[in-house]
Length: 355
View (tube, rainbow, N blue to C red):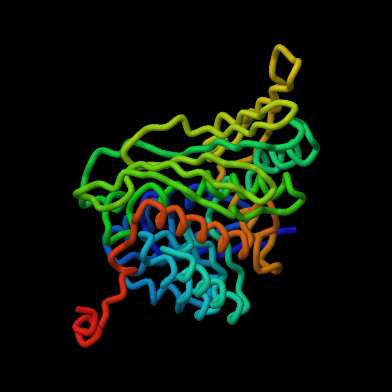
């Protein structure tokens, strides 16, 4: 039986509004505070969702005793900072993906949650959705035999704006960190299930990509992941190109098509998974029922597992998030993308020794 959590939101942007809609009026959560460095935006957000307290300084939100859990939905470079501060304030944490800019930041967040004995989850909401659980059951049950190839992509064509968060070097822009973690996390999940695990890690990652000359971030890119079991995954992402945004899993006895893997339905209802078996002229249509939006299901799942301090599979556990960030690091490394904030400046004396 889940408890009803009192939520504070740090970062009053678009995705925070989507999450708030999923919690507002529910029987498993209440919105009690919002904080954003833009005081006007925090006030407007509070008015939209009938939130009592709004703060121009998120530190003040963390000081409110009645805030039990915090949803961190700031731009990417501030996820780790505010997640760690929330942990130190004794708040449970749902941090929007990515959990940090890189695995090192992700490790710092996990250690903060561990040290302060609070719940922590990374916001890949599709992992909490019953459609993902159904997909896992199909693969585990041998619906398509031995898994061999996974194909998945998540990309969109955003109107070019170098000042936008999505295309800003300073704000951790580009496709890989924004939505590339979705196909990577699905590939790791399915490869793991095929090998009898909760998830698996690739032994090799090779990628190509286009880094914009103005944006200096990955505007579109694809990668291949090879797993020790022999499973191969092809994943794609981008912020300057539309892709099909579906997932396919190919096995020795057929293949599975997931038409809407990331947002199965906007507000509950029925989604569909298609199983194409060898020898069958028509695919089997698996219909999955869900109650509420993916973000509502995510918030409900968090409430149900607060005492466990992390989510059970197929949702993202701490180790799952760390592994996912490691693969995103490898993907960026393969195409030569380093954020300026990650570069370590050498002391002048050391530079002169190198000359």
